[in-house]
Length: 323
Image 1 (cartoon, helix red, strand yellow):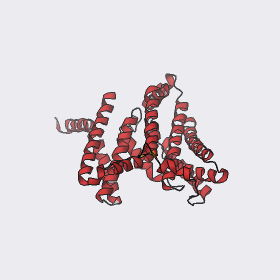
Image 2 (cartoon, one colour):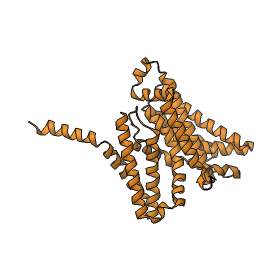
Image 3 (spheres, helix red, strand yellow):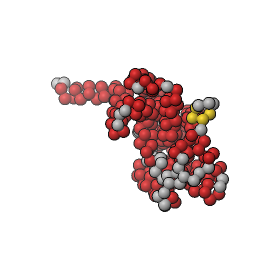
Image 4 (spheres, helix red, strand yellow):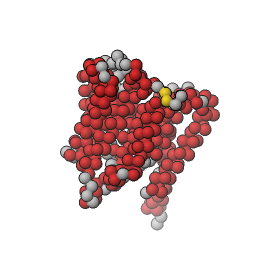
């Protein structure tokens, strides 16, 4: 399993390097420092979402509500600041909101046993509805100057703040999964939840914490997005939902559960960010960009599963054409 995982990550890394070379040839301005920093800025927002999604998919789950949680968080932060005048309180309450949304998903999935896709499909609309009711469908822009630092500020000269935050969260999440007993339980639940129960793993508790973690990541992502665009809106995180899931799967996390790494997810995030930025510099229309990004995802996944495809073709030929 580890060998297969490393093989996928190597394949994806080589694809990423080839993509970087291709984009630098097609768009000479691609490799400028300013543009590369802009790429890291763009990828951080859905990259943080993808960290939470990765942990969930490792347990064989899915969360379609993370975009809505991000949007709801932006509204909670903006409204809390408007009522209290305290940015610290507003941000803390926003992150707590994300955790509570994740806990709500976790209870329905872990305690009641409703399939994750059904729960999060419903809560995706539910959380978005709460945000729309609270904001009355309006954007909120009356935010303090210091609020914009996390989405528009720079550290160490010219490194975007959100890039640093994404890097720190990625390292911490990777360590959480690979170096802690809880991380081992997450993989165990994804591999075989029944066997995990007999091994003494509290599966319900693991699943609950996984969805809470994803909710917190969504809240942080929403906070950063809102800061960058200088406004809070109910729909701010929705655009990144499919990108975060796609980057996670592209990075090698098995949709059936049991395997996946944060390193792979980060490479997947980088591939999507570079592809989007490069196509934009070349002048490709947004509609064609979606087509090409989807095609790239299919190609990489086919290459990664080439051995399985070969085996199935061989079996088909053997069963149908050999006497």
